[in-house]
Structure formats: structure tokens, C-alpha cells
Length: 479
Image 1 (cartoon, one colour):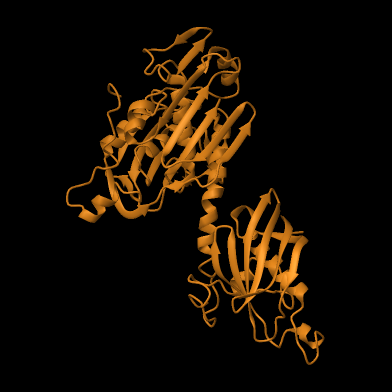
Image 2 (image 1 turned 90 degrees about the vertical axis):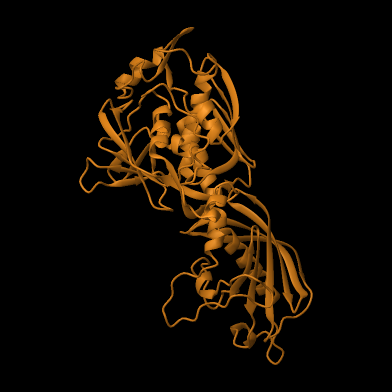
């Protein structure tokens, strides 16, 4: 294994000779180029928990493929993507599964890729767990340095957290706050408060390699018998872990950092949060972290990360028959692409004669603008009123409620659900709406709490307000 991991701060900026100048410049800007390995590299050892002998090989991977684990010992060489959706177990380590394929203890490998800013790679294994090496990410860092890191043409924009996230599981508390870089502040201790340590660090390739990557895993002496009986740490020894017994620290070498235990917890956090699939800009504050809490934090961040993605996807209508005319781009009231009625019906449960909106022309965070084309063919004009057709005010209010519901249903966590209209307040009707008018409905979500939401809506015709009101509704599973 050599004497240690070198400084990998140059990996994120290193560029192969002959790479175009614009690509070199892209490596250090706010939007980074994706990176992969230059050459394959291998290492063999034993798995910490399984105790199995295993050979591991890091391989280059194409852009946008992420980190994938490949089981070459199984028929078909199945792969498991390193995503939070594939997390199957978080007891004492993080395990991934896809179908019947399992990979255990992936966090140290993922931390090494994340710390060195490697976005795309294949990890081949001939057993179900990577070799633990010395219990840190040191060996994996050395492998990455040996393989080399090369830039790829595709961009990789870090996700910057927009809203705070909180996770509480047992004695673990984790909070994530918006930040312009990736920072982790962590306090660790056992259940009795022993070996309490604190450390805070902003993670980049330099600080990762110098301050975190070498920190080894550890456990308390009184846990060993229980863990072994539960099928864990079958490959554990002082060669790959630190044992804490009362006030004694059992290790085959001096501690590598004054706060090595909490720094290893930070290493685990980095590896588990890598499961979101993108570099992260956020400040993580953790007290007594665990893999379960780390992965739940990754899930919550992934939900927030998908919200703008879900919104962006709405700008491209779903596949439709070739005879269908695509929605126009741009209108007199909006500047972006349009989501037409065919797309709307994939979200809203309403149908003729009660679908009161025709298309979305703007979508910006908690705000949406939709159009309703009012025609003489509307069935309610037969009786409201003969010879003097006017759109009923309550249907304008219904249009406000439908648009607000669609805005909520477009959020990733509400996919496939339905919004039920609950109440209306401060409703005012100011001018009549007649056949031939185009009703422009602007909605802003003003409050959300769990499944309950509140929104303010304004209806306009030719720029003049014709009605307005506030609506409340609840998002629930479809019956």
C-alpha cells in the first residue's frame, strides 16, 4: 500500500496534453467539466464485513454514466448504479442493491471518487464487497492517482442547496444549509459520550486528500462480539480498523489525525452524499452521524435537486403521435416554451367538460401562469345566460384551484397524486368574462405544510384583473 496518499489537489485541474483551451478553462469555472479515469487500475484484498477475498478494478466510464459497481463474478456481469434509490441497507455500512445483486460497504470508495472529483467510473468486483484496505480511503486515492484523471467534454454543474434540510434518526441529528461550497461540520461520540470529537472542514480535492482521506474506521471493543455474531466485521483486524477499549486506543500505528474518529465520520458522510450523483454545495452539520441518517439526507437533497429538474422537464411535452402539432414556443404573455393541454392532462385529473385550463406559459419556482381560451362552445353558456353569455365566476375560481393544484403536482414528491380543493378566501369578481376572451391565470404558492398548501390566484383578460382569490387544497394519493 505504500507509505500514504499523496496530495491530489491537482487532480481536478490536471489536463492531458493537447486538450482544447476552452476545455481546460472549463475545469476551474463554476460549471465544471465531467471527469473520468485515464487508465484501469486494480487492487486486491478482503472485505471488512464479509471477510471475502476480492479483486477490485477501477475503469474509465463515458460521460453522464456516473459511478457504477459491476459484479464480474455473476452471470451477465450485472451493474448497480451508485444512486440513493439503490440503497438497501445502512447497518454499519452502506449497501446497494438492484434486483438480486448486492454490493456492501461502498461509502469509502464513493468518498474517494467524490473527493477527487471523478464523476464517471466503473468499479469491477469479483465478490460482494470492495476490499477494505486499511479502513480509510487512502488506497482508493492511490489507485485514482495511479490511473490518472481526465476531463470529458460534458459539463457537470454542482447542485447548490436552495432550502435547509433536517434529518433526525434516533440520536443522530443532521442539518443541511445553503452554502456556496461543500462544507461539513461534525460532532461524534459513542452513546456514553466517550471520545467526543469535533471537526469542521470545507471539502475540495486538497482538503479531502490532506484532512479526511486517511481517517480509518473504528469500533468499540464491547461491540465486537455482537457485530461478529450478526455477520459483520468478519474481515476486521487492527490492520484495517481502530479498536477503542475503555480509555485505550488499540491500533497498529499512531493516530493519523488528532480527531481521526470524527474525520472518518466526515469521510462516511462524503461517501454517502455522493449517492445524489452530483457535486454538492451545502453546509452539512451533523451530530453523531450514521449511515442511515446520511442516506436519508441524500434522499432529501435528491428530492430538492429533482424539483427544478421536474420543472425543466415540463418544458418538453411527452411523446405524442406524429400527427399531433407540437406546442408553440413563446406567447404574447410569456417568453418560455409552452406546455399544452396534452401535457396538462398527464398531470391534472380533470377532463371535459371540467378542465378549466388549456396550457402553461410560465413556470418559475412557486409561480405558474396558465391560459384558458374562453369560447362560445363552452357548455355552460347555454344557460349562463342565453343571449348574454358570461363565464360563471365560480368556474374562474375553479380554474385558479386547478392551476394551483397542477403547480403542486409537478413537484417530484407529489407525482401521481391528486390535489383536492378545500377552501377559498378573499374572492372577488371584478369584470365579466365573455366568449372570445383569453383568461390569463397567475398563481403563487404562499404556504405549504406537509400535504396542505395555500395559493393566491389572479385572473386577467387583456391585462385587466377580472377576478382573484386565495385557495387552500390538500395533496393526497389517488383512490
